[in-house]
Length: 151
Image (cartoon, rainbow, N blue to C red):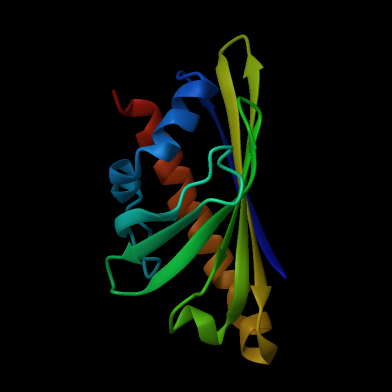
C-alpha cells in the first residue's frame, strides 16, 4: 500500500467543507497535479438519506473515470471515501483508493487532514503507487488551499 497525507489550517468551518462535498458541481475545483488529472464532472449514482453508502460517478479531465462511495460521514469530524471501478491506466496499478478527511477545531480555524491509501495491483502497482501517492498528496494540498480561498 502507498500512503500520503496533507494538513492545513482552514479559515472555513468543517461544516462548510461537508456542505461543499455534497455540491458535486464544485468537485471540478480539484485540478490535479502533474499527471494526476483534475475532475471534469461528478454525479450521484445513488444518494442515500444518511449519505453513507452513497455512490458518486467521477469523470476526470483526461477521460478516466472512477466511482466514489461514502463509507463514513460523521459531520463535522470525518469523511471517508472509497474509490473503486477505476479506469485505465490507474486500474492497472491499483485495486482501490481510500481517502479520509479529518477535521478538528483549533484557535486559528479548522485543522483539515486529507489522507490517501492506494492499494496496489501486482508488482507494477507496488513500484508505481508511491510516486502516484506523492503527486496525489501535492494535488490534495493545492486543493485544500483553494478550498479555503473559495467563497
